Length: 121
Image (cartoon, rainbow, N blue to C red; front, top):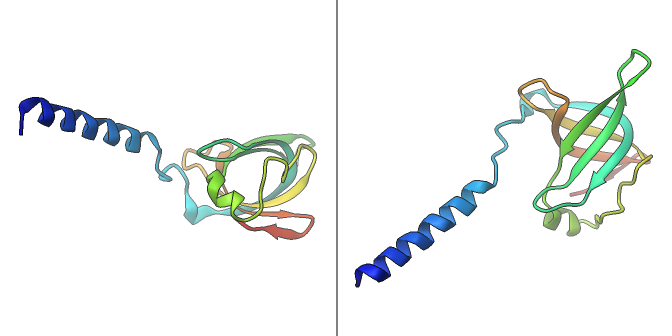
């Protein structure tokens, strides 16, 4: 094997490792403290590699708190009938959420109920 071929193989291997490492882990979420929230969809982003929901949730003080929630990858959702219009601003939903460990108003949505029906993904 020539040194040029070996160097090219090493470079390709390093590029593959950096791409694989670019996708984050779920370690930011505290799945031991999941909870339910009910609110109004402010935005639903149909993006790759993950979907995102911004939801306004009443905070009990006469105002709303906006939460930003990461969801499953598109391919998983498409297989279960989702599309970019499954949730639209103004929709009332109930979600099961795993919050961020840092206590911010961010998290991961794990279950979605719209009109009393669970949307699969």
